[in-house]
Image 1 (tube, rainbow, N blue to C red):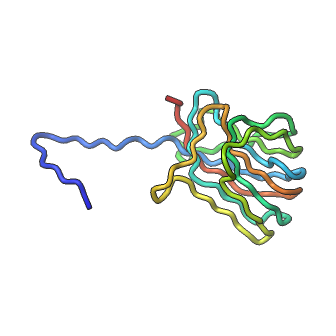
Image 2 (image 1 turned 120 degrees about the vertical axis):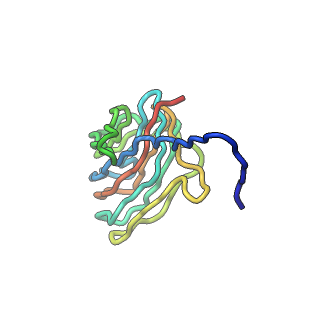
Image 3 (image 1 turned 135 degrees about the horizontal axis):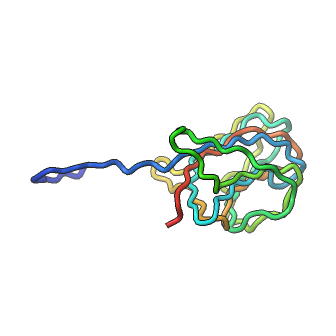
Length: 168
């Protein structure tokens, strides 16, 4: 089913420019049960998460993806580099991804887990958000985060793909 209209005059159609899209690599030796990584938007930024991918952890773990209404505190972490998928859209530097080697105190979870499942040493996790009519996963400002939680010590490797724009 389509929408049809009869138009007189000149019509200019301008595509909406896409928001800059980025990928942050996650390669971390998780120190134990709890957060292994956490994506946190900058203040006054809107982050739309498109996909999360993890491949073949060093040990079988239950992995959970959580949306939080407050980021974690404490723990020992480093920040992962964020790479623009288009070199003409450099990262503005406001969103960060923490990789934890010592488990932090978790933030406040919003609703149920976005994903929970056992990921074995030969398994791959690929979770998309906002496709085929689904709502995207949106993080608004530095009070919200996406956390990757594991059930035990393991080396995990993967990425999170997201776009970022000013918070209206």
